[in-house]
Image (tube, rainbow, N blue to C red; front, side):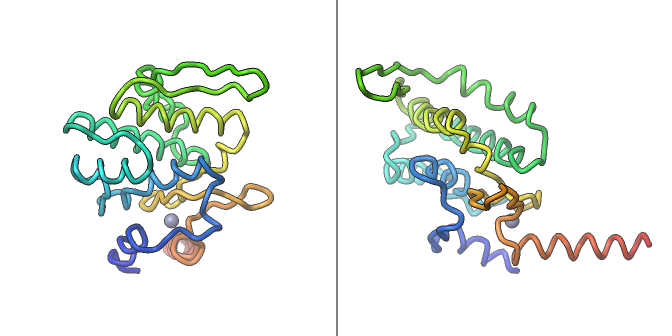
Length: 194
Ligand SMILES: [Zn+2]
């Protein structure tokens, strides 16, 4: 499959329903897929591009290079955790990478009679954008939907999707693109070693 296809997949094609997470959790999947891992294209390539993406998704814009790096760092920490949700990588390292974002995030707690308690993201700029996404992650972890946000098991792909399968066993972004390719590769290396 050509790289062009991979790029186009990100920018032009809406995700199939089978990949989409329930709202508002889907924002995290879309966010992680702004980079066609590992080398791009990247929808957050510049502060301007990232600001446009953020505004489009209801998040505060990026105001400088430092914020851009921070936002991109958060994206890769999330990807690592999605990869760990697929039984790959090291979950401990993933949570360690997330630590600086968790520590910097500021929230107020909204307690209103008759309503579910909520985290209210606080702070400004990119830290606020990150807090908004962490509040979504917080709800997903408590609801038990977090584990279903995965990054494709093929380590050079790591495309994010939501696993809707009954037994939670979907390992690939696409069986046709990654699953079969990986299987063929394993078969070839088995034949070589055998
Ligand atoms: Zn894949």
